[in-house]
Length: 256
Ligand SMILES: [Zn+2]
Image 1 (cartoon, rainbow, N blue to C red):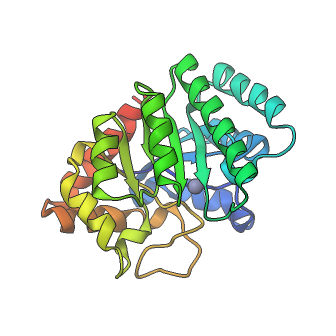
Image 2 (cartoon, helix red, strand yellow):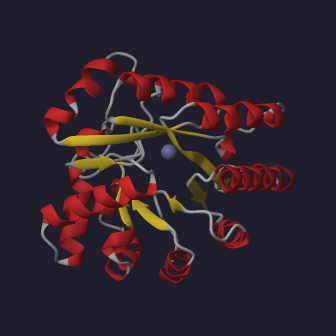
């Protein structure tokens, strides 16, 4: 049974067939899905899917690209969601995105909102789902500062050195369709070195469709491609990678 640990079914690209698609997942061996939120509205939607489907769980949080003027109030709402919705299993996705944000003041605000949500995770005893795009040094620094907060770096794109330090801090690393692309050299190095019991798979749907589906709308139906690719890189049976990555996700997100 596969666990897609990161998929955005709140995206408008699923408006046409969301229910049919989600309902079909168990028959395709996708037994668990975690839908992270990126702001209050998408977090609310993530919770609604988790309430509707027994195999869907939610994470709630403010993504670095979705910080608005009311972020302080939004955090109050996010905190309530974590406290009162049992199907919320993590705070995410949160983090830093310097690829889209070049302005120093806006970056500084991202750091504050990220730190506040790390504090929330510590206070509420939840793991975090970290988005790190072109902000490796600052994300690592925040992870160090909140040592002891469990979590995952999703769509991990850092170096082997960074991976080593995150693993030492207790983090999991999760991989998308990027690892199936021809130029994925760095991620492949990380996967080769990281212990299997710290790896997770995700689609990041509707983005990042793996080969040979690249360019299409992604969905959890393709998560097997990441399992197959990790199995190939590590020289381990596909069934073994499927079993262990699912167990890792269940352990991190406290799913029985
Ligand atoms: Zn995402």
